[in-house]
Image (cartoon, rainbow, N blue to C red; front, side, top):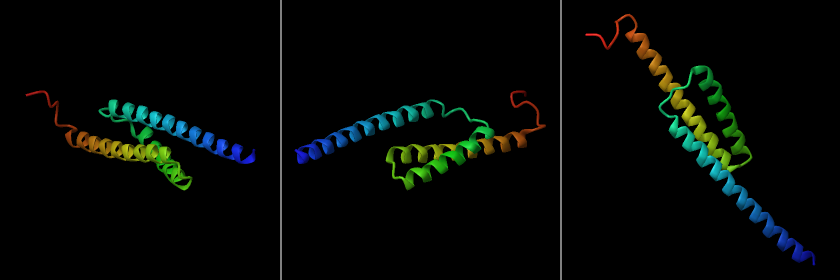
Length: 107
């Protein structure tokens, strides 16, 4: 009887683990789609910098606890935040260089 419970319990654990993995991957895909749809917008630095720090720390946390779904998600969030930081800094530098040169739409 105990062996039967162990086998059944182990099977149920694996089934629940697989189901939770499917749910986690579905969530990861949904978030990634949201990022792709918002990729053209550059968020302000006051959002980008804390998001970059937070996602980097959560990536490390996910690595320590070996949670693959969150490791991928937070790793991608860290990379996206770093890209947004670079985009924002470049945009600010371009605006600073163009400052005082008039409207670029004027002849």
